Image (cartoon, rainbow, N blue to C red):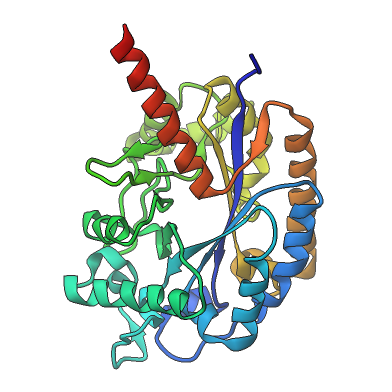
Length: 333
């Protein structure tokens, strides 16, 4: 019997570039960053990595960007999933910028949210694409969104960012969520596939609560979070090629493997491949560092025989198979 393996996936929020500090504009979009995707895909293919590109309406609406996505869809180990930025997805509100609260899909009125989901899905269908995995812009999802996903044949919602909350008005609150996937009630199967964010030491739940308490006002003056980090006790970490938390990816990968995590989910924004495209790509050195981190990480991953590449949809399928097998074994006892 072969040894068990853990799948890993590279996910890319594939979207327009804009000044993130300027709010959420409804007007024309720029998708120059999409021209960088073939180079990125070549770097991933060199190591046989699987990539899921979560593509939004702005990208599909621009002919040159759309053609790159259609070309990528023909490559091996590539999945084209669905992404959505509510502020610039038709039907578009007659304002220059939407309020912060309305940048989250789950805060929109039901009819408007569904109309925007339909609009993106129609753009996929128009060009022969049928997405089955989803990531909401700004990590937004909801029971309404998930029912729409199920009704349209999706198998995975990859919008959950564990142990995370934001101060933004109306933002999702995932502080109580861990990285474990969840099969949502009902049929057909729909899996929540959280991104891989946690801590450099186990158990994640304990350290999440401990660091949250250390950051509260009575204890903040002791700077315990910084002290624990400085002495290598524990740090927050994310499998993200662009985020500063990504600097601690190797420790998080080790922790996830020791936990027998069902998968590893890496991420980045496509706009971070273009100098000036995102806050994480302010300089050419920052972009070069991202590619260097990607290469170094993939070298380690592919050298580990216990790790295998998979797309988000393949991970959801694998989880469903494992669940069914577990149920059969329990019934046979």
